[in-house]
Length: 548
RNA sequence: GGCCCGUUGGUGAAGUGGUUGAACACACAUGCCUUUCACGCAUGCAUUCAUGGGUUCAAAUCCCGUACGGGUCACCA
Image 1 (cartoon, protein in one colour):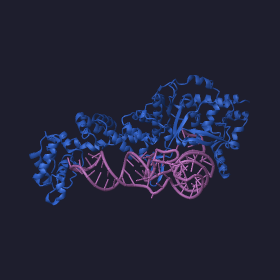
Image 2 (cartoon, chains in turn brown, cyan):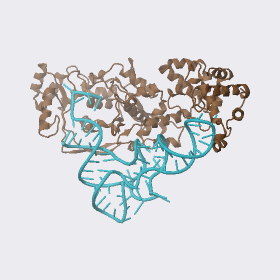
Image 3 (cartoon, rainbow, N blue to C red):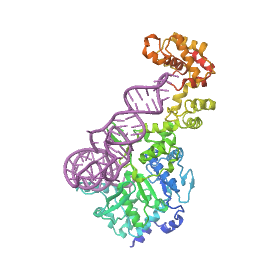
Image 4 (spheres, rainbow, N blue to C red):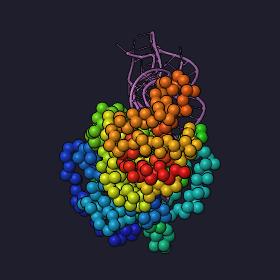
């Protein structure tokens, strides 16, 4: 019996050919040098920051070259699949403003190279597998997992290489008669690739990041189609999909490096052009004195939700990831502060290979700088958008009087070196809540040096009765505070105070602090003059009255 | 265990044989500024590039060994 007959027994309903599919999915018409990349996560319910790292690179490579960035749902592992996972992936991409050009979501397909969901591409995979069987490069394997387990044990005992190769590949030399008979008897089987490789020979593979790497040839008859769901394994789906969708560059984690020889043989067998690979480094986390892979169970910052929930600006996340991806990015950003990151010239050779510790402090720093450069309007818009989803209560308060909120956000913003106190949009509430009467409800006053309520009231009353004037400029205002110091026996000049502290009850800083705490309850705030201006006289008086 | 990748300060890292007495950024420390905080400014922070050997006039940079870390060896991706 021929291989062709075997192929027909296994896939009786497959009538299309590889050529048919190649006609359906012709070469893309793109400008010279345009890159086609894909984000291809498996829908496990978590969007890992490492995945986003890859997506940023994918998106960048496509957009920077005038190419295509598409989303492919790798749902061939039916056991791990989670139903809401694709939604989460789309949410994350939306948040990052990295929407794919082609995708399949919510029942609609965008793009001409779909389906973009692997479980819907079964027939395509089967066509390619059928071809492989026809040319004698794939075969059904009836080994059970128990048998394979025993084989592994034997191999271990002999200290040999583990795997389904050479003489260990029992089903490889079965006759087609026997194969067909066993299939007709209803035996379960997987399809294995029949490797022609020789482990003692080497291949030279050129990685865009690492450079040339020498591997032994693949000689493993690895599984390309699973028995239960008849779906392909990653290796085979990678071949078929990236060929048919004309992917030019594959960004994937370093954990894929060892399977490169398999992919090389697969592409060579079909005579397909292999995409270029960028194997990105893993994100690590310092845990005591060991470094380990950042883990979604132990490290909240491993998940994209962390950044969304805290309201980190997408630009900051991108900046921090680009910094990890390419070591000279920061330098470039320094000299091109306003440029779009897509205009950066990326050099795959500069991708770190050793696994980087993901540094949240660095993110905070990048983010603080970024937010400090925004206008009050921009911060306001971001804040509204963020609180809509993550803090509806605060959203109501903030949007109740947009101009009022903006004036708060504008404190010490319009100046050469704006304040940098917000690393994300959830920080804002912590910084400005006291400006809203709804939230300023019996706060805990952080009195510092002057704690005597009698003295505090004396200061506040004196100030309101004799010195406060709503129309004062910043300088006038502070001069009056100093005048009050002189009157009450506090030093208005810090230098004089430091020279002779005993001559005074305290100094102008102590007085300012009393005003500050009385108005905000906090001992540390931005510019007090601006706060008072925004509060206005009535509320200042009222807040002073509350002190008792 | 086999195969592969890696190892420059607290962190990300620059660096591919000689103005590197190891850049830059983050973090940290100290000081200045200052009504608080933040900002800003100034200074400090690896005599040394995992380690041993070799090549060379010259090595973090090239070669070999060792150690350590990571990845992978599934009908998971």
